[in-house]
Length: 337
Length: 273
Image 1: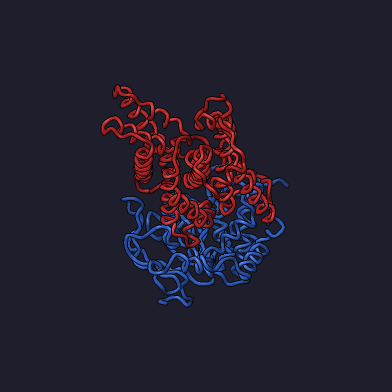
Image 2: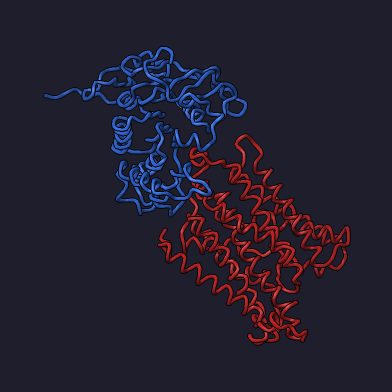
């Protein structure tokens, strides 16, 4: 595989450019929309807030939306890269491992049986559901004498996805109540969130992103296989557990604040491997930056594709993702063998 | 050490090993002599790989101890072991796109920590390992673009970068053609000769085992059937007992080591004048 950026200076420059583009996307996300806002006003709303309609839109709607898109995109991409590494499955991502379906089921069940409603309640429920499902998949994938194997964990993820999706649909169909809010959440969206939602998730998601960068060196060794890594003195159990915790915080966090957004976790790791190769010390930071850019760009695009109506960003990423998914499948997952 | 003029690099005492619930070895005593080449032979599934894995702490024994240079392996940290003992498992697989240089650098993992990152010594050991295996020219190539023999040399370079006095290898020549098998075994032979490294490996080919090993351990059904110098222990009876095969044992016309020629079937050619 010939990656595009070969030397360290090239990769550093690429990352700096990426961060710049990310910032441009964040500002663009705040500026563009049904009501276009001047750049100047955006700066003023933070430096000299005057309580005007525009400033309020910026601070309560546009800014949280941009920040959530950025961190959710970054988290999904990094979680996807780690999952693909741990499972040695190039199609691994939160949506294929039952984490999204588990989060969805908890939200559906809680609103049907306990009357839970509102996005902040959904955020908490989604995170619990995601963590619970991840734990379940991890345990199911570890049963047997040879411990956690890529194949078993993939099968466990697939069966949990099918299981929780069916349960969710069952509850939705028999519930007989209005599930508009739930249905909207189901597609995945970053609209309509407030800053409190972002603030509740940002600290642990940020910590998990940093944690993933610490894991990078150890992930490089684990990629050579369990026996080789153990032979070189690695405590592979700790690395796998660390990766699992990071994955749960990132995937669970993003599904809880933005709903199940598919494909970012698959597309971006493959794009970064094409750009910088397979060294996790480079791919994970690139994943974070490019994942943020993709979700921000998809969200901005979602405001214009059926203007003036907005399309949920989850639909946008799916439109972008399916052709990509087919492309990877046709490659036979060579990137990981 | 008892009975042997050489000290043991690795010593196993009363080892009981099992895979899942199936017991494989019980109460096994074994010594890997220091500074020599030891080869494990035995039929498929006799447990020789299991034994090697347990000596490298990849498999935890049910009972008994493995001593590495006199200290109990279970009490050493993973990195401490990795600075003294390298293990190359059977058929290792590198992720696509990994270069030879990136692979060999991983051999320095046991010398690094959060505070101690890449050092000048790490760089020197990596270069030395690349040179010793003749991989310096190919350092920038990706592993998957190499031939089978080159790949195996790259993996051996990684274990050399570990700079350990003992190297264990599980079937390092499997799937290689004869020329590449000789190339790999010559390399290991040189490492033992020049740098006095202890080499212990599992080999399928009895004749190659006899040719390169100072010490052979013949494993049969979860026990050591015989051990010693090939010229002392390899005979028709051993091959019959260990491999269930009738053969004639003669001398290698080049080196004089035991040469096993199976009876079996085959075309017969009478020499023409």
